[in-house]
Length: 220
Image 1 (cartoon, rainbow, N blue to C red):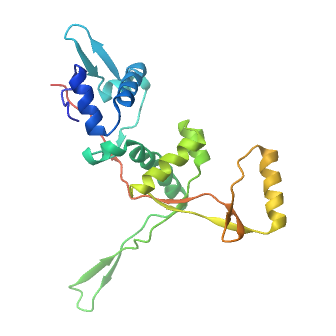
Image 2: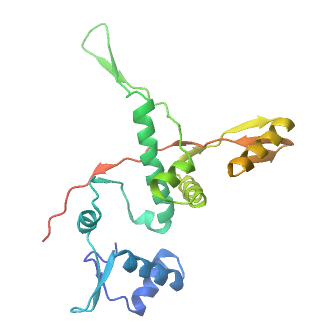
């Protein structure tokens, strides 16, 4: 964002500025810069001796990205990119769930006796949806741990609302749940709280993040 031309020399001064602005150590900044090169998002222009950022339209064409949906991203999001990423990924699945399971809200208009005044109201009840970390893993290729971390980061930055769900277990159910999870090779989502055992169920997610269709930028 600080280099709108999309090019940078990447000298010591640039590295120090990036480290200060992103609040990360120089080693982390350098490693991530090299990852962008390896991914093909950055390349070195030998003629002008600059590193150049590949345009989003070029990336779309190279990777066959057909949809133009985009999420808002501002300066305040730069320092918590993982949280923003978590919000975007979970919101995609959240919106898919809502389209499938929730009906669209319709506004009802009540006319007054004079018929000259009308009052419009709509139901703005928050709709929470069960979004599993397993879904994030299978669709986006992230590990379960990473899927959980970015969800928690998004919730911490108030980009998502997360409701935990627990089911109280008896001692017999605890034993059966542990044996079943071990047999299936799954994590034992059993917690001990206030003297009782609970099975941790899939978290419920709410997001009001919106997507918009991104227009193709004209080349000057």
